[in-house]
Length: 124
Image (cartoon, rainbow, N blue to C red; front, side, top):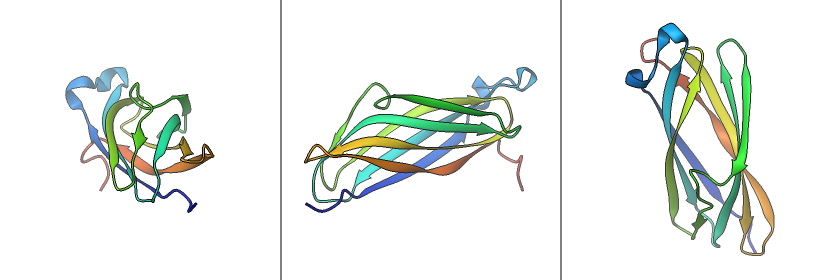
């Protein structure tokens, strides 16, 4: 069997109406699209996020699935979900990995590329 091929795309947006800058609470929504570009089905089992704020504080979040699901993704299909992240600075980053299983019940990991969380206009 060929190796699984998974593409990850992430879009993040600042939520000013849910943030409180006086309280150092910056809320970001992010939407992840997980696309199976391989020839066999896969299932997402776990997630691991590393969330870093501008002061260098790193939070690690591990858990089962995403947004309460452990989606099965058929070849040529995708799974999309949205979630929130709260950090104490107007700029930060997120990155991580998904633990998945292929059609032969072999576990594999997929990296989530690093992406920026930033209040609009804060960076040039």
